[in-house]
Picture 1 (cartoon, rainbow, N blue to C red):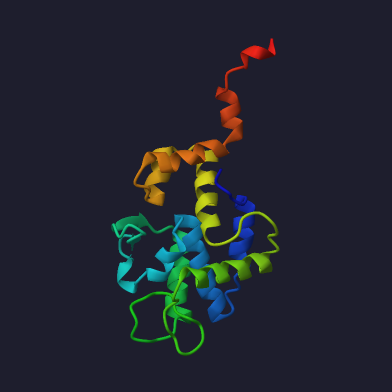
Picture 2: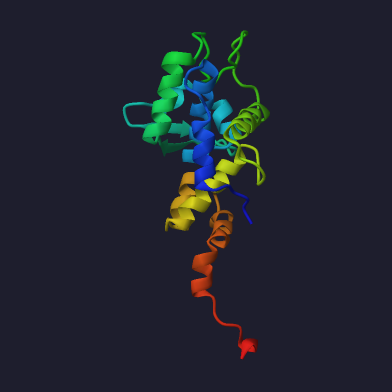
Length: 189
């Protein structure tokens, strides 16, 4: 079973990133990309300024298989990304979007740095228990999509799954829907 957190917990984590500091602005953009697009931590680390198509609201992501995909950039994630680039991102000759917030301003080096950002935001938001790490947003997005009636095909497309079997695990999370289609057990008579 995929491990996820509620949509309310996701929103509390997003709002815990204060936009009064450059670190908070950066962290909000990172968490919104994880939460709205189901990006992997590695996708966020590798994101380049040249991957953003502002005119068409698209984000180019290579993913773990190095197959490029174009994803729609939701308004709130795009706004947070733009705020980071315009207001908080250090001006350095670096194409990678997300940089460390203290000098030397180098790109975030690994998924572990993204996981630390997520952990700090969870703590600020008071989200206790349940799964942690950046990947929880990916599972939580897919679970929320299933519960609101999205098809497994659309979820697989957003998450960039190569196999429908990979996406099929999310069918298990909608217990209410599964109860409606379950047949009675013949031994209950």
